[in-house]
Image (tube, rainbow, N blue to C red; front, side, top):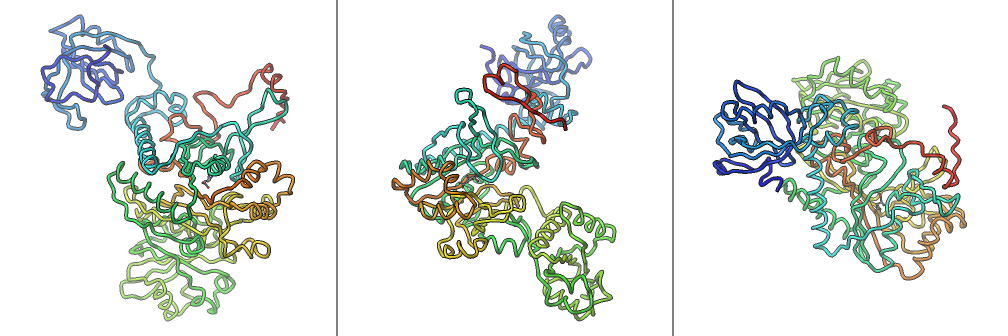
Length: 586
Ligand code: ASP
């Protein structure tokens, strides 16, 4: 037996026992005639003691150990005189009587402790060492517990976990596909699924009724902190259901996860906002509802007083930051700079402080009488000590989005985005289509199989951009954690969708013929949703990036620096695949 106990389980009640432990040497300290070793495994750290006087040979052996050596020790559990209350095993130590070196180690490139001296790149290159650090390991453990709870919850409701293939044709979710050449079918390619969307719909046609899968999805898009080229979805689909059924079941799942993982009771039903409302009130389809600062539109009050920036604007709106009148000129200038950054693109910001006596002092005082400023103050419901920040612009939607950035920034600065507070909501009634400047055509906001709101079907021909979809997103703390829709199950309606999306009949047939054909054999009404597992775990773990809850993530340029992938392949492989590589010099 390599061990009788783990490094995390010995307590004072074990004092006097003889045990065998195995693990990695985290630290060695020599003090007088004693050598102390912190022995680590997945479960914790146990202090080992080697006594020079009692056993000089053994102590000598211990003094030769290096960091990350793998050892096995036998010894007796002893109560520590110098207790460490910070770790669960801190009341005991092991007086070692036998030491067995299982494997040596090179000196690790960074310290393998909670606080490490290793930079991002180095840690990613040696991810297997990084994963030994307790804080990284605990994210992986959390992920495991969450997937177990997801399975438990869905199983209890009769969902079947069904695997779908990874080598498929294109499944459009609005990103580029990763493709895999087929050796046996020269010149032809598989695509890795952007999601199992079409396959799960086929499972509904197949009568599976309730499906789920914890599944890798692949999207070749530009990366951000909350995006990876491959990521994991909790993908679900149900038959004979409407939007309400889906919202109820998946609200239940969120509640179950919060309760079992974090011990938090989340109130149901969740807040719901229509997409139009969310955009108007918060300038975002994933508003962070941990705090207020709802937008107030003040065009009527502010126009017609000679301030040309406002007089020419199509939108004038702002937020009221409670108690923030103490913002200095410098802080306000920094905020202005922030929203003027090209990614946000605002032209400027107007501010107004409510003074202790209730009067308003603004950056545009020369255009506005105190009377008008008081009307504005009333519109915001602002009190003495509050700060009003106003943006304006000639594009309503754009200005709202800029105001959203300002709202989030100010909330960050005021400490309103507490990671231990959770605000969940559904955003519903997304537009069915959105205009793509890049493609110069309407694109499906969600995907082409999403059902329009049946009240809006007449608008499909005339004003498609006004058509609402039966689509919903779940949002937690300003992050989209899941989304789905009721699907089209009427072949004529699906044909119409493809037409609006610019598919010719042939192309629709070529790409989605299998699905359209299946729908001719009795497709049940069906709907579904996918949760982003990585995002859920990172929210539960309080992480800023989903990378930290993925065992082997890619970096921001989509590289696995540990495996050094992607990489060129050998000519022989290229030949077998009938591929010619033609990389233009950049
Ligand atoms: N396939 C969708 C997605 O990946 C989710 C769904 O509609 O169920 O976003």
